[in-house]
Length: 120
Image: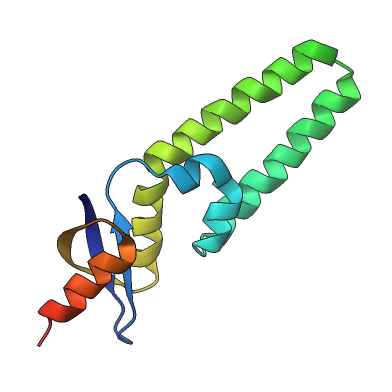
């Protein structure tokens, strides 16, 4: 079972955020951020990736440039995996969500179902 923080918006919508490592953020970094409505983070990473690729491509660094891009990409993926859920929590707070509780469940949908069943 995984631990999920349950956030609720004043309009009644809820979100479940898994605690700890985020595999989706690790594998899909900027696209994951955009899907979670973290527009600035996702767009900035996407543009930085394009810029890095263009700079290394223009410098014609060959295999050394490819190695640099790979190392940076792996580092970014690890950072997103480690911090992604924390960043999503911060984004929810900034959108007006409030943390309600922590629930143990196997999936985010399961965590939300448990939360909603416990509400009067």
